[in-house]
Length: 195
Length: 208
Image (cartoon, rainbow over all chains, first blue to last red; front, side, top):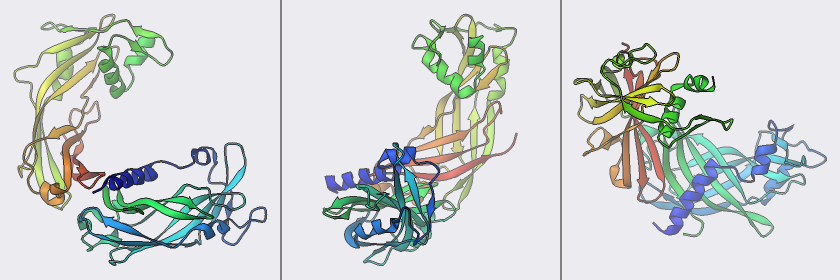
């Protein structure tokens, strides 16, 4: 394990645990006005922000076995509504709903989750940000990357978190990780864009 | 009046105050000082505090409790928790404009029938003695030591970890005179980086 590995784990945990851009989180009230898919706010479709997100394949290491593979992250629009949120100064922005498909080349992971990303009122992503969401823990049953004992969906969920950083006019995914979260907190895998 | 309200707060806060008392002063959010200095002294044999017998108030908090430990892998075993007061443990008075609390430390043991859990530790019990006595154990997780064996070692692969802590946690809500439950908790720092926290098993004690 390299220092980068440690860094990625720490960053991943931080991403899971703490908000990015505290002003949005602290001052936005009650989730704000919902914007149904396809609807606009002041003429802007918040889902335009998702155009900056790439389909990207990154190296992934299964923490408990040390095996490596590649993880492909595929963003797309969600059927869930986005929201108008307000920052500490009362200016509007968006919390944009997006679906993310995540799959590994070794076939052990193939799941989808919905996350929300911050964007300004012109539907430009506010970066850096994080993508985080929950999937059923049962996705990993029988894969051998974590004991099936811990994959009871009644007690744990499979959490994924990854950093989204600015890259030119778009975005790129950074450090991230897969964890079991709930009754337990168990590291399952980590992504490191520059191992 | 302020002091009375303070000592009638929930047991956990009261213990926190007790713990801080050795530092000198008991402060409160209003910034006033409740007591310039808390001192301790042995309680004399038969000494009563505000007409109450601290030894009698602490008496229910020793004994033996039997429970079932359900391991995470589906196995189950019996578990016995014992707190002994034979010979009687010494009582210590916390003095702050009079005796405000009495504390004692008793040997405690926990053992599972399958041999996977074995622990002994000094368990401290306290009773605050303002107007209404509040007795409590400041129950903190107890570290299990020794060579871990199944089912612990079948639930977690200890070889993955650089450091491992396995603790016994008791759910003991005062004024109940016995624990209601608990858990065996695992915390390990992975050699690969990161920290895992795993609940290895849960304990349910039989009602007294």
